[in-house]
Length: 184
Length: 411
Image 1 (cartoon, rainbow over the protein chains, first blue to last red):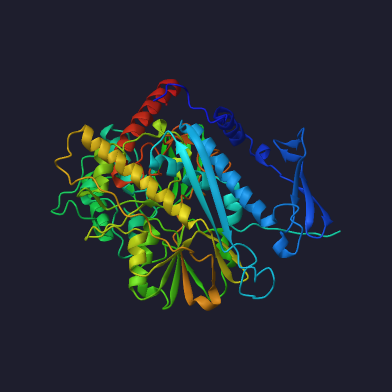
Image 2 (cartoon, rainbow over the protein chains, first blue to last red):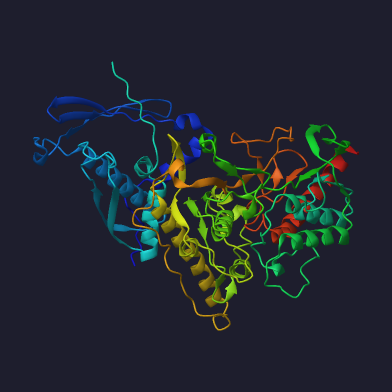
């Protein structure tokens, strides 16, 4: 067994420090995440993510993040980017994966590799309006993690279970969220 | 002054009497009031009879491994109150507590009292924690809390949605389903636990392995630990394990946490699989702790071999919603926990969430103490068996406080 300190690249001390500070200042814990989207052509749109609000003030970044979304050719589209539902799978995967890393760091478990594969089932009779009993969204999402870490099976399973418990995207998907859409 | 003549208040009374500290126990009803008026008919304690060790008073019957019924709990506590000649002022409801220069002014419906120190032993379960969600339940569906629930006969025929899968939810769900009322159980966080492990009661393991004695100042995140729900246990004479698998076996339908009502339809979280994983893993860790303790203490030969339990079984796609109108559900039982009632406490000791600020039961106000809350000082603090050690600790602090203040004030 190696004597070197566990390093998954997560600054857990900073997170724990933030947790303590925010317990005393809950107003600073109010964040707002944003995205902006512009239609290009057909089902192709281009989204950007730039600034967010948190710790009591606007936060900007040095980079602007760019996302192209589209539908694939079987949908008679041009495949200029991943579909919106695939972005949701990416959101879930990355949220859970980041959680696994943070929790592993906190629990002093060295991760060697973490790969998640996701699959969301969808009956497109929903979105095509063919059958009113079929929902638009996924009928279920399956996530499979393959994790190589310096820990036993139960400890690795516990990382994944805890990651779901504290995951923002997992919560957004499994629990209701209000969405209000305004126009002009 | 002690408010509350339940097991915690009585234990404190004995400790104060042992120190010749003059005191009175104010009780809104009679001794063991909550056990008399706020429990359902078939309820039994989760802890075995031998494990109710009050100061100098414990079980002396012939069924130490059994689980007391409510009448037996009441008899036990009545017996204790008489044995220690507790100075109980019964039928006296506290209406206000205010601080003044000489301590605390306690207003009651029988007049006012003045005291130098005050121990609040009013219990952790005064008010059912019914979520805001309940306001949106469609008309025609009856909401019941465990505080009102007595037995299946008072529940309408038809389906029941039981919300919450800790001890209360599983016990009431089991009883109602067996009474012929189909139960759907909405499952959030729950602490799965076997009744028996390696042939011994799980509460025996919790006791010998030192889990019950874990201290509040030795725990990583005490605030989280204080919010952990009760072990998913029942005190059945057959000593069966009343977990989600047992409920599934009799036909109870499981779904995720009840998280919304939209257009007359209930919404359940899609996180049931995760809740069950978390619970199974947590139980595994607890059993590992017991196995390690058994090995270290050389008792492996005295107990059965180590074993584990089947994972919690759930459907591939648990229901995410339920149309109340079409479901046949007539009643919702909100087994969603309780909170204490301190509405009469007019002292500036509350945090922003409305909880009393305290350190191990020593409240953030001079001469003011709490008892009987979850993990107040030790993991067993809310159990009958936890009252003795907490009462000893806190009465020591209280006695020292009185001595200091007598020396200073000369009063």
